[in-house]
Each structure stands twice: as C-alpha cells, then as structure tokens.
Amino acid sequence: MSEATDRPVDGDAWADACAEDLAAEKARRRAEYGPPPGSAAEELRKLVDAVADKVSSLQTPLFGVAAPAVQQAIRQAKSAVEPVIERNPQLFDHLAAAGNELLAAYRSAVEGQESRWTRTTEGASGAAGPSKKAADDPSDPRDEGPSGTERIDLD
Image 1 (tube, one colour):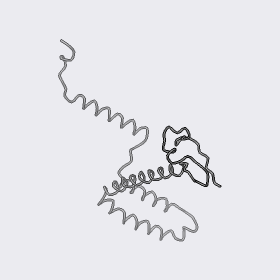
Image 2: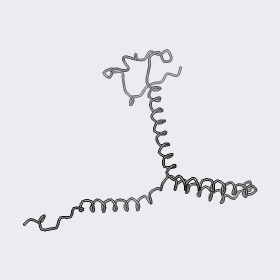
Image 3: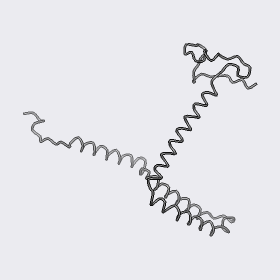
Image 4: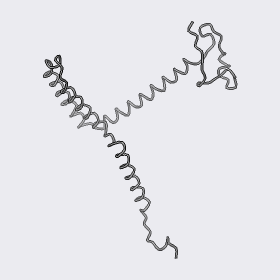
C-alpha cells in the first residue's frame, strides 16, 4: 500500500496550509513594518488627535495669549469631525480612493504634456527640426525616442 492511501484524506488541508502561510506572512510584515494602517476614518481620527496634541503642546509667547481660543477651536473641530466619522466611516475610504484616482489622472495628463513639450517639432524658434512625418516614422535615424538627449534652443 502506498503512503498516500495509508493516511486519511483531509479535504481542507490545502486551505489550512494557505491560512497558516497567510498568517505567518502577516505576522512577519507586522514585525518588520509595524501594524498596518487602519481605515481612512481611523487615520483621520489619529490625524485630528495628533494635530490637537501638537497645537496644545506649543509654548510660544505669541501663542500663549491666544491659547484658550485656539484650544476652544480645536475642541470644536474635533466635536464636529467625530460624528461624521462615526456615521460615515466608508465615506473616507471612498474619498481616499477618489483622491488616488484624481492623482493618477493628473499624473497621466502631466506626463503626456511633458512628452509633447520635449518633442522636437518643425518651426520651433525658427530652427529646422525633423518634419512631423519624420518624427512619427520609427525607422527615422534622427528619432532618438524619449530616452535620447535633445538640445533646446532658447533663442
């Protein structure tokens, strides 16, 4: 009889092994990088608390006169933010995701515009550059591509 038939079959052995590996990887990352960030709502709450602690710990002569008013404003801001965080914790996750999408769109637009700005075109500053047809031709030996160096004539 073979070894495979001597043991009882455990249908969840693969799932158990995967779960153990995942738990070990999470523990390794937690040990190496610290605890993972919380939700956006938790991070906002931490930010508000950190700013409030920092502002209340500032001890300057100019700030000393206005300290009670500033501390009152901080308490009011915290009391306004807390109910929003409690009622809509997913809102902040969605706002963070939307911010990431806007950043990606902006980055894409900027990179596209930068490539158009750095591309040599005919008639720029009176200098004769390659024609539009030649710039689009991949077999053109003058086309150095985006990694080539180009001289920009500022006159």
